Image (tube, rainbow over all chains, first blue to last red; front, side):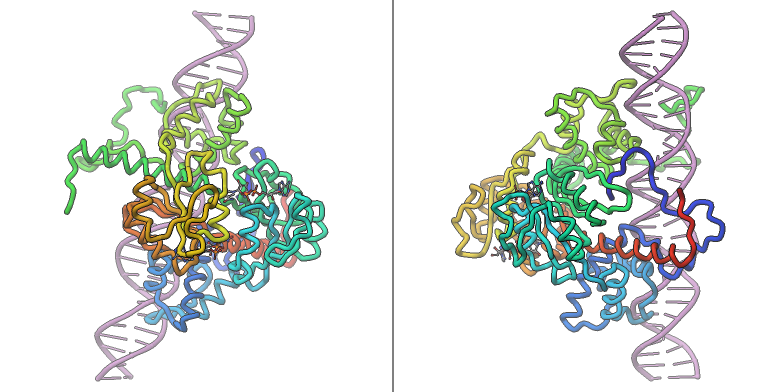
Length: 249
Length: 249
DNA sequence: AGTCGCTTGTGAACGGATGCACAAAGTCGC
DNA sequence: GCGACTTTGTGCATCCGTTCACAAGCGACT
Ligand SMILES: NC(=O)c1ccc[n+]([C@@H]2O[C@H](COP(=O)([O-])OP(=O)(O)OC[C@H]3O[C@@H](n4cnc5c(N)ncnc54)[C@H](O)[C@@H]3O)[C@@H](O)[C@H]2O)c1
Ligand SMILES: NC(=O)c1ccc[n+]([C@@H]2O[C@H](COP(=O)([O-])OP(=O)(O)OC[C@H]3O[C@@H](n4cnc5c(N)ncnc54)[C@H](O)[C@@H]3O)[C@@H](O)[C@H]2O)c1
């Protein structure tokens, strides 16, 4: 989620509103964020199964393939409706369709990448996005040597042209791959151009208005989390040595 | 802090049962996973402040810079100890040191990258890892044309050599940037070589033994989560239009 | 010393996510 | 058509993480 300025935290549920139907609202808006992330994983696994002509799958099989608990998987699927058959399982095609519907993948989402350096090149050349409904349709940089150069089949435009090009190509997701100091400025430009979703690779905390959704990918943070686990494990080992733990086997 | 009026309130938490908690003192290192991730972010913000010669910072300032709630920040910091001064704030240097200690960053963690394609090249060339205590010290691929070629100053080795090279260079973190079908095999090799932490970019669910820590970066999933929010927002707008919703001021 | 204002650190309440366990609901075999 | 078997969908208890609110502690100023 995007960082919000001062305090004003947005309350998701409508307060004292008179007539409220929390239970059976046709489209459940109440899907937990964590469940959404897992649905995307299930979708990938299911797509793979569909390619191998698997027609039905049980929660046990699917959960194993996705690396989660089967009860959790069933609960996740229950958020989007009841599409299983008791005693049998789920039809792969149906689940794929329903998850795509919920994730909004029935519509194409054009992507732009800003900052065509090492990472930007890799992203622009990556075939995995178009294949999943996220065509990369615009690239931007400030480097004059890059402007007009084709990368992954798309010409690089100057960031001054973000508003025009994003509007023309109906960009709905902006990916930031610039050096950290440039990220906030680029972000502001994207927001001004009407882009409401941003994926940020620069290790900075972006400030955005409430209506813009930001997700970040921070590799240094990932590594530091791994480092923490190494350290913790070392601590535990030390404790086990000293505190007399019985090693099995 | 919590001793309300009467001081000898110690025994408050003794609900009935007699012998129940053997694991009270085991490890004070019970820092929630989510807090660890945020500590890494605080560390980066604090490092930036230190560079600008900021010496002290309040929880309010730091939390704003890190994009979180100030109470949450204080609680996160409380997991690692009490290093603040009431009425004043925290000393930047002290916090940096303590967070580094907790995250295990006092030790260098050598990294290897497997799969030197688009993404692997970007990672190998990235200067942000060495600068944060994660030197990239080995690269692997299967492509004969790449073996022996220097990328980012490191020669690419064949994956057959993973055990030897990883041992020699004391690699503790393995990064997987191969095509999805190769990822599990590479993962198994890394695990056999003693690598206990893996960062996976391939969109597959890796199976590993319990003692190995895996984190994944899945860009397609990130985009699909963004897509979900776009769809949800569209739904809400449609609902507001149709169902006469009162927009709060 | 007193006290005033500021900020930390933390109980406690809350809310959301997880996992268990089981009734409901279906299929299959006979 | 019936009963046995399988698997879903979910109520419930639990756990984890977030947020609030405030006493305790510190420095500054008088
Ligand atoms: N390369 C990696 O593997 C990697 C890994 C993790 C994070 N990152 C982060 O991703 C970002 C990009 O990394 P990189 O290695 O590709 O850097 P890079 O230096 O190779 O590329 C940065 C690109 O951004 C362009 N740029 C600079 N200012 C700009 C602006 N104001 N508007 C638009 N474009 C601008 C530059 O011209 C350059 O082409 C950095 O923030 C980096 O910290 C990179
Ligand atoms: N490029 C991106 O921006 C991007 C984005 C998201 C995810 N990914 C994922 O990252 C991975 C790599 O992407 P890429 O674009 O760099 O692919 P790529 O095809 O450019 O590179 C893959 C590299 O892996 C090597 N390789 C193949 N089999 C191997 C094996 N068994 N052992 C070691 N190396 C092997 C190939 O020789 C090649 O050099 C893929 O799984 C992809 O889905 C990439």
